[in-house]
Length: 177
Image (tube, rainbow, N blue to C red):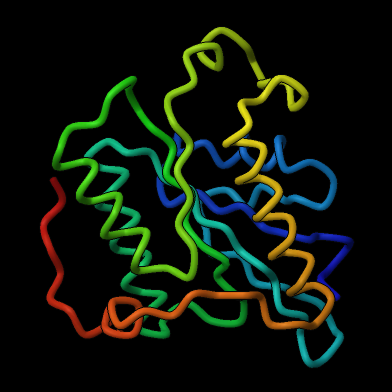
């Protein structure tokens, strides 16, 4: 069980990534962790495992920040909490070839990779309405909720394993697009 009913902690890898919006859309049990790696606290031992979803925008700074955090995670430098995956949120209506390549690479460096396409209507509202989301966004949210529930129930979440994920910590850092 995670602290105070948190089923998933949403952590931004940089300011303006969209973590607050994602936490809102995930609803009850989602916690906006801000720009920090969340770790459960308290007196209970062992500490509960916190399921974490990272969020980044697809601009150059966001992709570079996501890669740094993914490499830190792969190297075992981020402790106590369990990374579920990385959500990349488009920063423009169309991604460049370099952005698409970086997004693909990043999605292979974490247990799961999700992509939220550009949502022009989100620019005009303070917080998007959960009941008016595109089907792909709803499926992404549902998958994150399911994985978070598996961790909070004490089960290992279903995680794809690839050679690239195992080698992420060993690979030389690549420059951001």
